Image 1 (cartoon, helix red, strand yellow):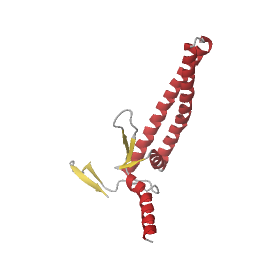
Image 2: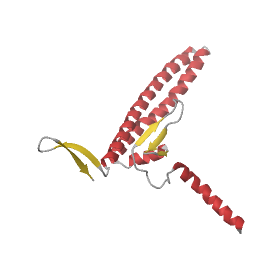
Image 3: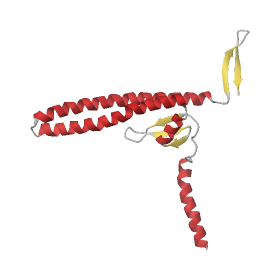
Image 4: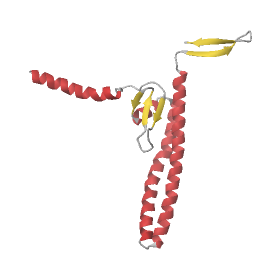
Length: 169
């Protein structure tokens, strides 16, 4: 009997550990500004909402909760997916063309090399455009989070010509 209780408790702890490690339960979208950073250029990007470390899927769900940011994010995806496909095709054509050219087959190697190079350049351009739309979506989302702040202090001019503090709750 005691063994089965320990087995149940152990299995519950195994299920709860990933939730406690991330600090995010997965059911609700955390509130706060979206930010990211990378320690080194070759490391994976770390995404945060407020102080909470989240996955890119949670970032996408948070952005899609705001209609204006969601439209910018959907435009980013419109450029991202074709760019990814063109990058794969262009890279493959570039590699195949270089190998064919080095083997002495200039009839196939030269057009494939330059065609793959052009296709890869278009893919880089589409990736840049997609990144701009993604940054814009994050900025729109962060501005909407700031607008929903429950408390703010502003310095405003008074009727007498001076300055005064205005509190908003």
